Image 1 (cartoon, one colour):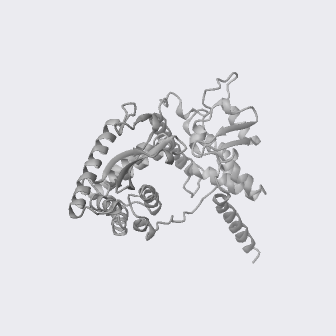
Image 2 (cartoon, one colour):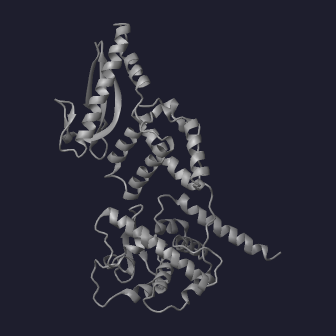
Image 3 (cartoon, one colour):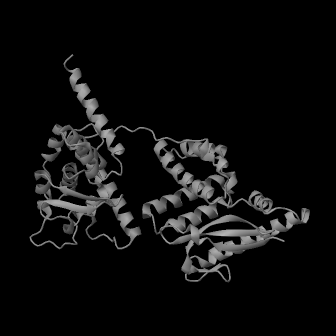
Length: 400
């Protein structure tokens, strides 16, 4: 008779101190394991009762899941052993996996909750969005992992493209989330590696056209006259500041406070990559930041006024505030573009493109540009070098 028990595999503990829960099957002194898709800390596990302690926030849900899986395994084991008392442990494992493939939604939810302390709120919300979108697509409460086939992915892609009108890069981002779930399921031995549906499907990004302001366009924008403290005044200033201050992302600009400015440079950890960047501000950026600097600034006060009197006390509130402020800034930038008679669609990320192309054209080494932009790899920065080279080629065409 096979012995079935849930254990915490401490030897697989990750850098966050969490170890995976496995269903252990012992038959004729041979052992096999099946991952349950959950990770917890050792302090939250009771090995005597094979259950999660109440100290864990999801103890009740995980314990219910454990009980269900043990019962399923026992039933499958008994059914297999009824056929023959000499059945090997591997056959019992295959019977359990074959008849009771793990539920995709249960696994994905467990993955999401385990990841919550380690990922940004935006990433966590993206996981939730993708799970809910698949639930709507299949229109049922349960979806087995082995039902996620290449054909299923094709149908879901068609749904996203044709019915939901998602752009190719939006679809790619969503499929990256699904691939992450599936790869973890393969790692946990819930899916055989050769059954990974992404082995036969790829969803490449569609190359987007990167726009930036030329020197004359940037000068035009700088010279626009707006009433001091008007919304257009502040939006124009934060955009131009970014064009000179290393192409900082909008979230880093909105959260920039006086403690990160020493009078001539910025020193901060970027929100998206947590990379530390030190930026010596050129004259134009210094002129703009001094427009906002009070005589005795409070170090915790924000430089730019877009989040003034807005609740950012929790990660959820902060994410919402940043999203709303970014939408409002981009809307105002469209109005400013009309004032400047630009044909380009102006948005905050264009300031990042403008900084990168200007810096490379003026001779800054690409590795320095990459460092200032906070890129993890210089390969990401190469796209700007390509744009600069194309511009130079076009300029040479004038000689013809």
